Image (cartoon, rainbow, N blue to C red; front, side, top):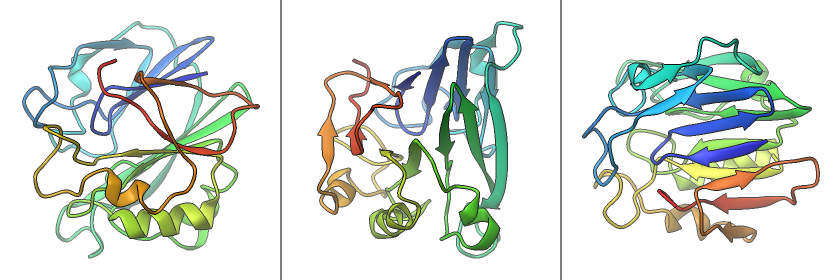
Length: 203
């Protein structure tokens, strides 16, 4: 299985049977990112905001989704959605692997919502704060869930990302297992070692 980062919170998961896109962004919605035009078998959006809900920019093949996808309902803020509405976590299962995309999670999880995310091979988690949980909260959630691979998303780096969210190192400075990739794709398999994986946008 391959995980490709298209910038911000947009990822494409490739299985042997096809691919799935999560949280595509609209043109011009995220500073520093190029317009997005993708093709996949399925597309899932955590919520309808411009930087996450551009499903129309993904051309669907007409083939069935190559994975099982479960959802967990939560909120975009820590006020039960009063500030920014609801958010949906997507959990993809295929080829014996489980990957969760947290979207714009804005609060800590507990109970059944937390239990649904245990045993993950990869966790795609926002770390920038302001619109989502911040770096400290993200690290606390990671320490609780113990996924094998963590891919931080929704952060600022150089000219990419919103001015009001934190830079990547606010999160990576809390980790001792960071691996930086020269490209935008991670190959995930049963033997992939535990790590915090930082992918490079557009390469």
